[in-house]
Length: 134
Image (tube, rainbow, N blue to C red; front, top):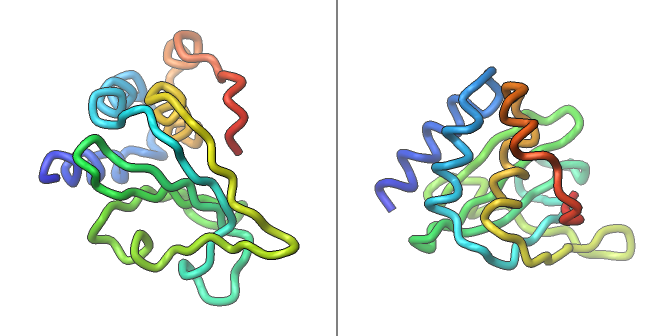
């Protein structure tokens, strides 16, 4: 858990910065197993908003994580002790539904890095896959 928290702090601080995607990708691959993930619109992040998306997954030590993003919401990755992990809930009604998808660690890493301005070499080595995630 201690390593996952360190990894998350590093990810949060560099997620939107230039470069270092290949290193982050390798770290994610080491610490995120293949699993069933959930993507949905979330409540509990910012009052009254239903346009924020959450991508829920676990690290290999069972640390819960949620990657939160939206059109005008800052992209952030949160772990166990962070409020959004405890407060974020999928909105499921006639307008919204949660999507559960089996994903490989490669696909999860690509999802987490998809909002980062990655170096061109990274994008060439890790082109988007047809995994169907949002």
